[in-house]
Length: 240
Image 1 (cartoon, rainbow, N blue to C red):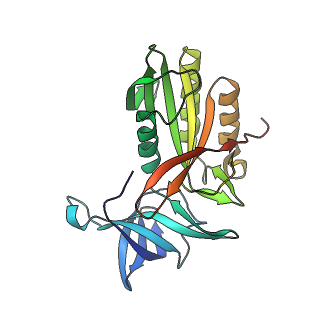
Image 2 (cartoon, rainbow, N blue to C red):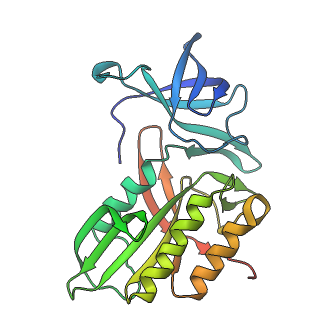
């Protein structure tokens, strides 16, 4: 996926989860934060950020800028991280459409439906292959990294647990089900559930995996104005 116009700035503060104060060419302005997660490890005073500029297509928007990326200083250099929570679904949709993602037990996909209702939840994708087999896919964007290990979530997510339970139900109904973690950066070597932040989610993920839900993780190629799904990353679910 590609953003139309991106500018560089400096992060100042985040007065609430939807808004950030940023400096662009020495001028302070507000930006919509396209991620309601905490992102405390990323959004620190003086961090270099990347903002989508909507000047030429404001529509009903109140803020000209959207905060979509940030640079994080690590022991192995600056890490560019996309924090747009809508981006993971878009890059997975693109990868499914071109056949880049191979889903275990599924043949060539002939139907890809985003935002599909299943049970009491809206699941990110429902797909069917050429043999008519149906699968449900839930996507989670990952922005938390430490020592080359990516983890999710960065805050408790009861909604995430609910989605995993729905995926388990899909398996019971004879369908395939996948939990896909999109790591919105390059350079990580491993994905783990973040038991320190929300062990209940980690337990739910392990339970789902033990009951037929496939767990996948992919990194991403990230630049100032692009995000492209990268390679599959090793998953360590830990002990249940």
